[in-house]
Image (cartoon, rainbow, N blue to C red; front, side):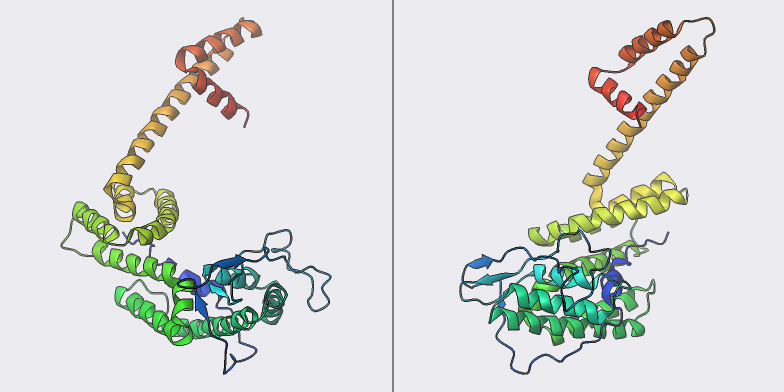
Amino acid sequence: MKYLVYLPLVAGALLLGWQLLPESTPPANAPALTSSKHQAPATALPPPTALTATHTATPPLPSSLRGTEVDGRLQVDADGNLLINDQLRHLFDYYLSANGEETPAQAQQRIRQQLNQQLDEPARAQALTIFEHYLGYLQAVAELEQAFPVLDDLDALWAREEAVQRLRASLFDPAVHQAFFAGEEVYNRFTLERLTINRNPDLDADQRAAAVEALRESLPAEMQELLVPQLHQDLRRETLALQEHNAAPQQIRDLRLNLVGPEATARLEALDQQRAEWQQRVSDFNRERDAILQQPGLAEQDKQAAIDALLQERFAANEQLRIASQSKR
């Protein structure tokens, strides 16, 4: 079975690598950038406000952004320096995500205006510098993708990930690199290590699951927390894909073991069993209810009384509410 877990490695770059050419080069003497560590207490600025359609410098907002809250917050320290964290990247990506609804130049202009409106110096110049670097990064990643097509090949995937990390290190200050991409890089490397384990022909399913669990537990606690949401998202997506192809139960079990480990797999299997038992009880009830409804010569009120008695016999009070809720759908 071929797993689809290598796909997240290219998703981030493909999401925004859409001919975003930097419109200006980063300033030669950019103000010093500060990381979120070892600096004065942060000052949270008011939440960014989406640029209105009536702003004279920009056209109306793309339809996908109208009525939404701007993603990402801007923060400065007590000295007015920009705090570097992932919120800044979220702000960039929020506007750049309107791919196809407006030109890259329009999206870039919105971001520059947002930074100019929300920040004072020196944070403003620092944020604008990072944004120019980010645009250069997106363009470089788009070009790099040409050299690393999506292949189900571990060596090619490792080469691509290492090339992307070298690119980021060459374009960004270490603090920006860490804030923008640390979680993504941890997940990508974990995914590649996991693929390496899964494709080891010398390991059986239980040994692979144990090796993946050990790999996950070897990460720092905060890094393990970063992995959880993506792992469960992958599990849902890949489970649906297997179910659509009528995969055997063992294939789904192997997928769970590889993604979330034996303990979580046991919990999921117990939940599956509970759901199956519930569905069987509901099916039995529906069959007997239909038989009551089809009895000739029985008054409607008697039919309803018989159904109510059956419901009380088969289900607890809280379960009866659940049945009633499902009937209303």
